[in-house]
Image (cartoon, rainbow, N blue to C red):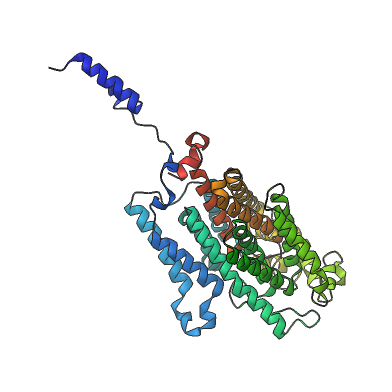
Amino acid sequence: MLDPGRVRDAAAGATRAGGRGVSDWWRRAEPTCEVAAVPEERIPDSRLAYWGLLAFTFFVLISPQNIIPALAPLRLALVSAATTVLALVAYRLMHGRPLTINTREIWLAGVLGAWSVATIPMSLWPGGSVAFFVDIYLKSLVTFWLLANVLNTTARLRRMAWVLTLLAVPLAATGVQNFLSGEFLPEQRKVRRIFGYDAALTGNPNDLALMLNLLLPIAVALLMTRPRRWVRACLMGFIALDVVAIVVTFSRAGFLTLTVVALTYLWKLRGRPEWKWGLLALMLGLASLPFLPAGYEQRLATVTDTNSDRTGSAQNRRDDNVAAIGWISGHPLIGAGLGQDVLALNEERGAAWKAVHNVYLQYAVELGLPGLALFVMLLVSALRSAALAARRAADDPARAELFHLATGLHVSLIAFTFAALFYPVAYHFYFYYIAGLALAIKTVADRHRPPEAIPGWAARSIE
């Protein structure tokens, strides 16, 4: 026969040990988010998906099929992306894990993608919008989702940062080599513009400058982590090469964005020991001004004096922006359709068959003001994620690496926010890649926070 006293004592002990008494056995335990108790290296996830993502990054940036034509039929970028998606989905289904983290950015990207599809029936060319969504925008959205979900540890983020920094080297080296050897675009007779790197994202000098500007802060972040002396020397060489390559593209937007990167880094590192590195870089930059290529000052002067541009590109882009605003005023809710800003501008100012060189106007022309609002919300949310990740790691010496990576990604996003005023790349990888990295690093930073400090929706996303 059971002793009632012993039963009461057992119940009290259970209450002290587990927080619930015997009589509360039927109550569902409240979920907690003590993920920090699990070392990052033991967090389960698909290694195949991770290595597939690294391979995809290599194939997209380097495009080896353009170097070795025999590789073209293999469609390496598509195969690696498909492998990554299948590996991640299969692994998480088998282990009963959610297919995606549950964050505001994921929802905003999904809603923006859904809105772009919903407007296709009203597009100026529905078939063209469908092709654009499948060939370009869907790939960017999938890449954004993969980055946010696969890079779930500091080690994975660090390795990706190194991959991006190393892959920027052949891009920059090719630009500098083209300048030194006189490999200029044939149609550029009044201003000599180099060929870019032969890949989808860097094929012309403007795109090359944009890519290098977005990757440059990541290299600076690695430098700030104070690696070994020889590694630091290599990183400084990589950074200098990137800067020189941006200059020799003769891209006005590239130079202005580079200036934004430098000034933003100086501001963000103020009051920290690393500030001296930023000051040294600024002094070296000023000392290099006399060595700018011939005609560079005249090229930059067209930024403020548009009519002085001998090529006519500055005047054309100004006129295109005016035409885009005119189209938006007449079509504020439903735009021209995904990828159809060229047709819209043709209707507004005559057939010139050129896209508007402004990401914000591109979204508004094609997806209406609702599409622009969704993108701006996504951009602001990505900026906030990177900033929060940096802030949470700022005062912890053990997480200095995480702080610098988050700071670098925040600077990259600020650079894109500015560069977007001059580029027609609304749906391409440039923004979605950096935004995916920013979301990933915020997820990692949240994992180290006390459970009571994490909002419920964020806690569910990192369980």
